[in-house]
Image 1: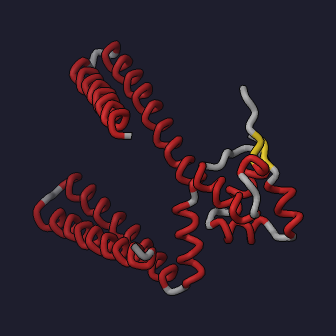
Image 2: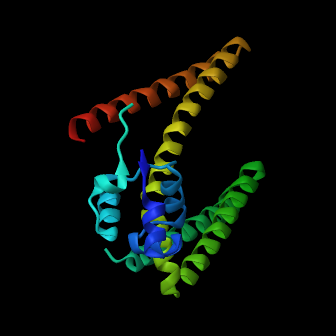
Length: 65
Length: 140
């Protein structure tokens, strides 16, 4: 699943460390999310959406297999 | 529960295991002899040293709010939890396969009693796995 976390984070002008701290996850999780190696849980997806003030479907792009 | 409280409980658990380890070493020194005595004394001392190190590291962490927060985030991080789950699952299946191979080799080598014991352990592990799977499927 692709996502726009890196773009949104850069738009907001914050570091991976700061985003990790806001979302209460490790920086490694943010790196994996941005690289598309890890798919966030529903709970984390909501947290991310709430943090960026956008709906989930604008951040996470669902691709049918 | 506050994470600091959890840390304090962990320190107490380490202290209890430290005491048990020292008791194991002491009772081995008093009641056993020969190789058994040496093995149990070593086991007790090694465990005690590990627990002392854990108590010190937990105490150092507990004295710093930032370190406590970092540890809490690291332990509750969903990716870390997911990795731990995958590691446990992989470890289980690798162990089952490894035990099955060892059982087979022992059987061929003529150690039929050991082979049987290992085989029953493998069967028991698989039965427990399917039993837990059924419970989780029903309640999950």
